[in-house]
Structures are given as C-alpha cells and as structure tokens.
Image 1 (cartoon, one colour):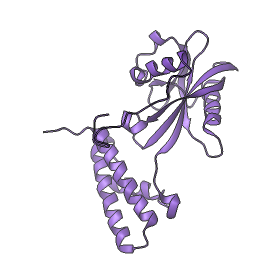
Image 2 (spheres, helix red, strand yellow):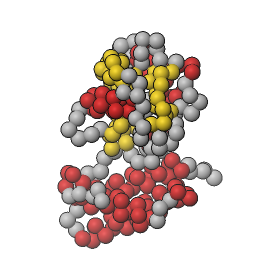
Image 3 (tube, helix red, strand yellow):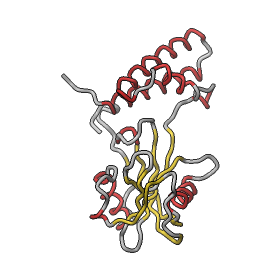
Length: 226
C-alpha cells in the first residue's frame, strides 16, 4: 500500500481549492457555483487531514479561501510570489537569518510587495531584516515552495544572488532571532534545506554563465517524483 505524505495531501488540497475558486471566479451559473463550493469543502477536509493536530475546522479553510475568491481574471488563482536573497561577501560567507516564526536559519526572504519590482523587494527585505545594504547580481533560481515542503501554501520564490555594499549587521527584532555571516562548511545545524540550494548558489557565484536553477519537470507531470 502506498503511503501519501502530508506534503502531498496539502499540495492536492491547495490544487483542488485553486481550481474550485477559479471556477467560481468565471462561472455565471448558480448550480456550478454550488458544485465548486462542494469541491472546495472536500479540499478543506484533505487539508485538515494533512495538518493533523494543528488543523483548523475545515469550514475555516473554506472561509479563508473564499476571502480571496474574485470575479473574472482577478479570480484566477495562482501561487503567491516571494523573493530570496543570497548575499555572499568577499570571504565567501553567506548572510543567514534565524526566522522568528520557526527558528530555522535561511537566507533573507519576503513576499513580493505590490508596487515594487522583484529586485527592489530583495534590496528592501535584506535591509529590513539584517541592516545590510546589497546590490543585485542576477537571478539564480526559481523555487516551488510547496513542492520542496517548505511552505504550506502555493508559492514561487525568485532567488537572487547579491553582493553587500554597506550597512551594519542589525537583525530585525520582530522578524528574526539572529543573523550572521557563515562559511559554507559552518552553517547552523538547522539551516533549511541547505543541501538543496547551497551547491547551486556557489556554482552560480563561481560561473556567471551558470544556468538558473529550478525544479525539474516531473514525469509524468504532477504525479512523478520530485
């Protein structure tokens, strides 16, 4: 018997919910809307099962999803967008923060705020979270957060290589528990998924022609191995 992981259940639940909300956004039929709402309730049951003891009442998931259900093109549900900043100094040390919400260490990240370009958000987030001023070198990665199991909601993260150009290390008191510069072989033990992104990051730094890293295309698509 095949065991289904919690991450897979969440992925299925979010995908079903997204299709249902998109259908609600475009349908003119009251009958179809009812069917989409029933589908969304099933997705909520799946997500509650995945979340286990931390689960909300399934109705709460439906209520939250429906807050973002809109008409027409605005109602087409897509992943949220975040950015990540790989800041490497002259000593080949990487700037890491310890996240206050989970306690894990990771490079600075943030949601892509409306009104800013992705690189502008990167510069802003690094400054706010660490006090360090950076300039963008180039885009080096595009990551599906749910597929990697680092997010419970659908998101794509655009990862940029950066260089520090000023500022002083000053961790944000609310968003971080700490921040620092770390050599590749001296990362904190609970650095999130370092084995997956560190090799690609340093390969990109060493070779300006190194391709952008991204998730491979599964075979078959959707159900194949990550």
